Image 1 (cartoon, rainbow, N blue to C red):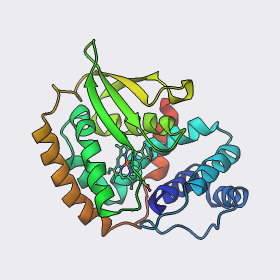
Image 2 (image 1 turned 60 degrees about the vertical axis):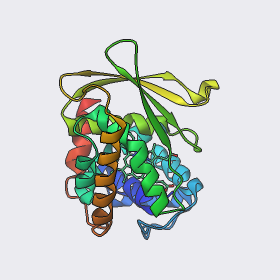
Image 3 (image 1 turned 180 degrees about the horizontal axis):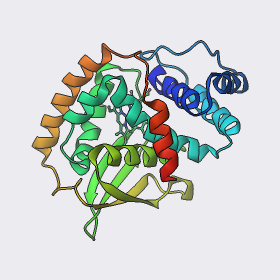
Image 4 (image 1 turned 60 degrees about the horizontal axis):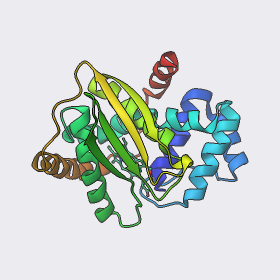
Length: 230
Ligand code: HEM
């Protein structure tokens, strides 16, 4: 995965446990602690090794590390200059998720080595909705849960997230059932609106790429907030 993913893991570990812990993680994972280039593609295996080592050093199961990481990624992304991109891609959480697949698709066409997941939003039988997540990579559903929790924070909505279909059980893709309390959801976004949001997002992304590499001064506060909610 691209270096920006590995670097977010680094920042998560440093924010929660400090630099020495990050050096321990690198030693266990067999990875140089010298840092990652955000826009360079690294083998997926390296990311999985980092998550495994972070799990050992931080004393959380890998699923928890992935969940924290997903939530952190949204905060990290916003803090490091992708906030505009997040803001441009939908005015509520459901419309954001409806546009996410197209936004990811455009990112993929700009950076061909990226291998991105696919997301589809469908109505549920109740007032909630279903998010279908399909990926060539295995085991990242807990990270999606964290990403969704981070998004809920951003959109100022309370959401319950239930994984109702699991790849671990032989299903072809993971499916999450989301139910909002309060703001954060409107009627399904039209394809046109999703496309417009994706165009704006792609433009914002190009601007955001220019500022990557900036530090993340709010990381600790974000992690503490995440910890308080557990
Ligand atoms: C600012 C917004 C976002 C940007 C710029 C972005 C971009 C990216 C990039 C660059 C990767 C790495 C792909 C690779 O190296 O091959 C990635 C992976 C991923 N993204 Fe996004 N993303 C964003 C938001 C989200 C959100 C909100 C979600 C989910 C709700 C999401 C779900 C994922 C997942 C699960 C992966 C891991 C790869 C996989 O499942 O195969 N992303 N994204």
